[in-house]
Length: 408
Figure 1 (cartoon, rainbow, N blue to C red):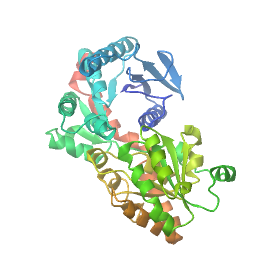
Figure 2 (figure 1 turned 45 degrees about the vertical axis):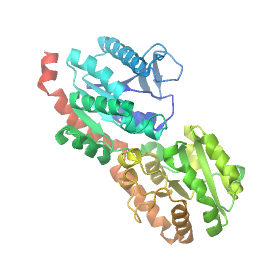
Figure 3 (figure 1 turned 30 degrees about the vertical axis):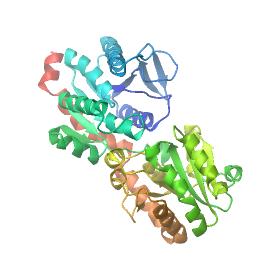
Figure 4 (figure 1 turned 90 degrees about the horizontal axis):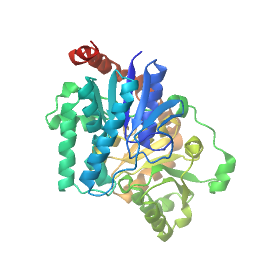
């Protein structure tokens, strides 16, 4: 039985797009008969034992508190602690392949151990750490720290035996850095159709509690980061309400920008049309999808959103919801304008209002749009088939001279 060790930043029971992609990968691989485990670094903030089973998946933890002090020294200490934990784990459970996932700190820790033990390693990038820091407001493009992180990322990619990325934008960027295109596979974001593929009916009690009876409902379900452009969606509401007086905006989730968004909504002349549901348990999210007519994703235009594809629009399509999104590179990889969704100009509240108003004005295309979008997810973004992209890479690594010499 092939053993795969996934080296992770954080995992379940924490909830994020990162942990849900991880869960989907591990569950699909386990269903295929592979033996899989995950090990998280010190950035995993959930309390718990050093080894635990969550949702049927086994995770190991790197012990100790995250280091403090100088950022570079702190991160180097966290890398060392993570490498020691990986080393300890493989002493008793030797994997055939190490599959490290971004950020680059995980790749550096995993490479130390993989090289020492002759275990092949694949490095999977979900976003470049330097661009994610800019998107989250914790970094500045072009700063010394940005440059250094970019150099570390490039070095880690070149040192890996194989590289996976979640979209063509990331692949193209690595090729432009001089990385061999034949070394890179694209393993796109997908949906666990066993979990999201059977939409629930709208719950009238929840509709009443939210005050959405008879409303045209626009929704955003996700994390409240600045790059998501939720402020532009709120800014679009006055014009949209004038076009569609019954429209309401339902915002589900939370994050660093939540208070600023609440303040913006309160200052809007149509504050009573903007509803904050807060964070909801993941097993209840589908009930909020069922309340929404159109899911809106107004991401701002920047390197992060041009290079990286989000997960939420795919979940919305799987739930049979209509999708409208800003015309940035990451969305264009998921959404064909006028076929699986509607694209609008990024950073333009007026364009958002016109696009959404037009969709509500013509409901005749809705059934076909929903069916086509859901079929796209089932056909091309279903995790049960997505993991097949890893298989030839795993096989090549298992048959490599490095691996065979180590096993001898």
